[in-house]
Amino acid sequence: MKKRILFVCLGNICRSPAAEAILLYKLKELKLLDQFEVDSAGTGNWHVGKMADSRMREAALNRGINIKSRARQISLDDFKNFDLILTMDNANLEHVKSLSKDLDPRFKAKIKPLLEYAIDKDIIEVPDPYYGGDNGFDLVLDLLDVSIDELIRDIKVD
Ligand code: 4NP
Image (cartoon, rainbow, N blue to C red):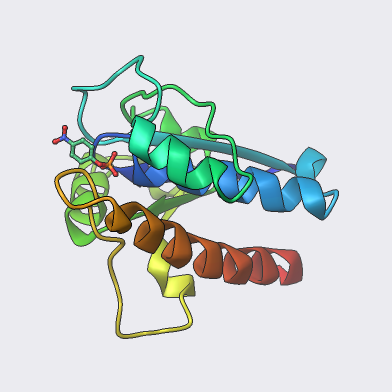
């Protein structure tokens, strides 16, 4: 059975598409791609259908990572179609939890902040880079990179 992982942020144009692309990149390097299904979504719908933010795509490309996904909004089906939903910040976490509160727990993805996998336990949220300066995108990529390494380690042991 494939392990199915969904990353969630607010707009699905900065943090979660970058997380999706980084995990896909690392799984490909490890030749584990066929064992996973990876996707991303936003809690909001403003950017549905759009490519990721050009600043995020450029920062990722500088690291050899190509973000190809188009934005979509999370749906109730996602809770049964994925095993693990990983959120970027506390607002995403609360939003995702509240969307799923009436669903049958037997058919529900586990919901966690991605940075539970981070090594630095003082940082619990991936900051929203959308209205910040350009270096915000590199900070996001650094946080994603380290925590996704730990995520892979954890999932491989499961
Ligand atoms: P993301 O960043 O949640 O990482 O995709 C954002 C993108 C767009 C907006 C907010 C955050 N926005 O307000 O349009």
